[in-house]
Amino acid sequence: MSRQPVFLSDGVVAGLLRYEELIPRLEEALGKFSLRRSSELLQPVRSVMPLQNHSGFLGLMPSYMPNEGILCTKMLTFYRREAGSSLPSTQASVLLFDPEYGNVTAVMDGLDITHKRTAAVSAISAKLLKPAQLDILCILGSGHQALSHYEVFTLLFSFKEVRVWSRRMESATRFAASVKGPVTVCSSVKEAVNGADVIITVTSSSEPVLFGNWVKPGAHVAAVGACRPNWRELDDDLMRDAVIYVDSREGADTESGDIILSGAKVFAEIGEVINGTAPAFCEKTTVFKSLGMGIQDAVSAKLVFDKWKSQQ
Figure (cartoon, rainbow, N blue to C red):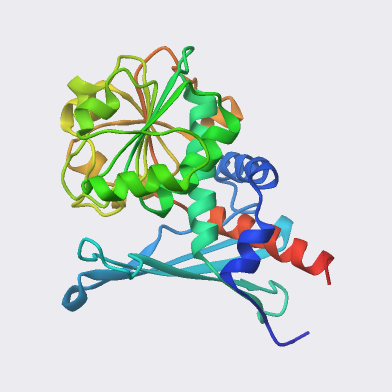
């Protein structure tokens, strides 16, 4: 049956999407993805069209989960902005379809979904791979992803200290002032990561900013930036010495400059750890390379849409 689609703004989406409901759904989806059962889940690698004249790209991220009745795609653009630009580097919209009839049931702003599901998956990786000692959290970057990661990591874990670094000191200072808890602003990456138990990289860098000899042995790194095959945040030493986990092997081999340029070998998908088919080496230095997947947007959008319908 064809009906007019519902349009959900960023404010509506943000008000409906809660980590405590989102995280278990994402864990289930990640586990299903790693089983590779086409009867339960279909998701190609993100399709990317470069926009050379504008230093950006257009991405398309479709997915289909027949048992859950979810047919979804996210469309996003990413543009490299000048420092201090008021324009967002990433913009996104998520479309839900009726899988039986093919009509669009909902169109919703995709930024809050992107920020929260990405941070939630990073938190899942930390929950599975975190070291025994969990005192210091370090965030490299100070944008929207830094904020969403701060929110979920301080919600789920009890850190004694949180540090932040950004290329622009004023951005890091502004970030620290915007959050509820105390945050130490660091003047260098080396200072920020010294002794850190969990390190989150959410920068826009295309060259390494985090070096292996700065990282505490046994630390966990959630690497979120550098989503193109010629971009990277982590140096060769870190990538080769750490145990590497990813959300998708296909995505990592196609899109991750951190993996492609270093020649690092992927040990396992995080979904394999969830399924119990791959071990979690918590005693070793671990890197979770997050590229993002369409199923993460799909289960997030379905959660938002179902909650919205229940309130009508």
